[in-house]
Length: 145
Image (cartoon, rainbow, N blue to C red; front, side, top):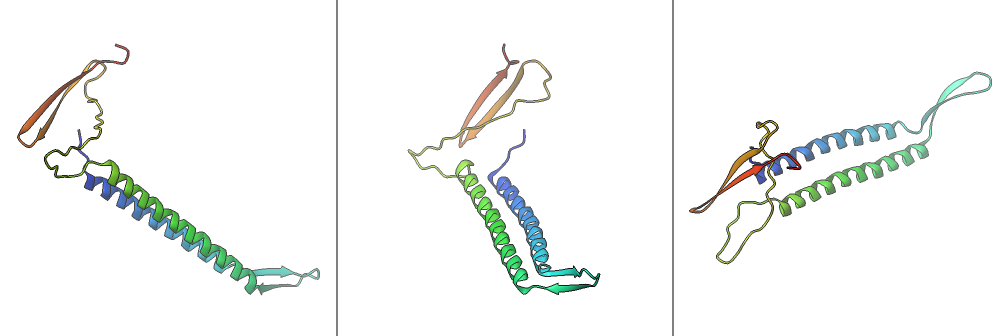
């Protein structure tokens, strides 16, 4: 069984945020580049003559739209990261000093061992709090037994 610490969860979330920021930056860059090309076009006359043109109005509109879209993408990523860190802060048991009369509650979810094929699974959980040692023996049978 692997113990996952608060610090490990925070580092995992920070890594996820860095990856999201990189991909969002790439998307924003591509969006900005695409907008920078807006306003440029080609034309062909009925007589077959071709040429190019530039519309500063179309370029300004496209660049403004890209800036708004990029701001929205970046804001969404930042807000998601902040929400995820707040959830971690609220839901993960951290190193804590409890004063006399205080208590801390929560849930501990454990996956049963996978190396005991098919039948009943048994394991022992040992929790040490200060000088107190608590031993919990668990036996799980197959579903429906």
